[in-house]
Length: 177
Length: 177
Image (cartoon, rainbow over all chains, first blue to last red; front, top):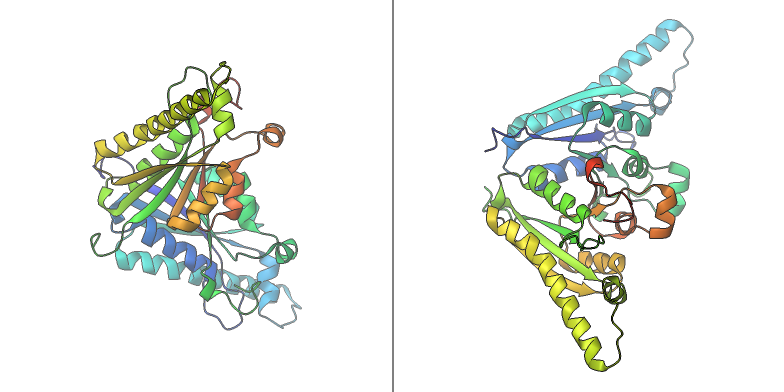
């Protein structure tokens, strides 16, 4: 039966951790991914395709972890190469885990405002479900951080599920991820 | 493998149609159910349990489709019996469809304010996913109707997915369901 109907396509929006020295994927991205695999896909790897989208915010990523001064066009080019590499590393993490369990997947990077880009990619690829991790911030923190997940729940043209981090996995500063 | 890990428990909040003469389940309840079966469960019926919760609003249900005058305690008793029967009929619709495809399920009725009861039942039964149908109303209609789904997305203690009716299935008056 699984061969006759097209697989369920789950789009997962992923982003790198904001914690210094923390490798690769954010806590909430990993939580979202693990939820989708454990609770939805389960052992039925032939019935699903995971789609990983990472939206890079060019400026933020540049300032994030570099103290360098950009003085020449080459400096910017190097920065942009480095960004690209980081984005690919992030996706590699998820793609490798899918490969390990034989779960088909696709992954790509886009630049722009995450909430806008996620919604426009939903329009384009028309997934059956969008999974977005979230930090589970209180209302006070939310005002300053803004949440991509809330925007997607309202505006994305497909069913959206928001996965909060487990209580034990939140870092000391809940704004970090 | 599916036997070793406990099944994924999906709670679906269902309600009867508000359209006069329309039998049983609302359009958005059916859409939510069909989405869960087609896109999540698929052929993996041993990996899932569906939990159907119908929250009855006693007053609303009473006024909904009866022009009778309640003059004696017996009248109220009959009304309450009738309500109960309607609630069971609604659940029967979903339970039968699960039985047909061999998908384990449970179903029950609670009384009260749907949004509050759904969230307290989530706390009690701790499902892996809550699926709520919604009418996909515009902001103007939403102010007057209020939406259970928006409340659950914010307050339920588990991942929540909201399923909108398909465009072709919306009745003439979108407030109807």
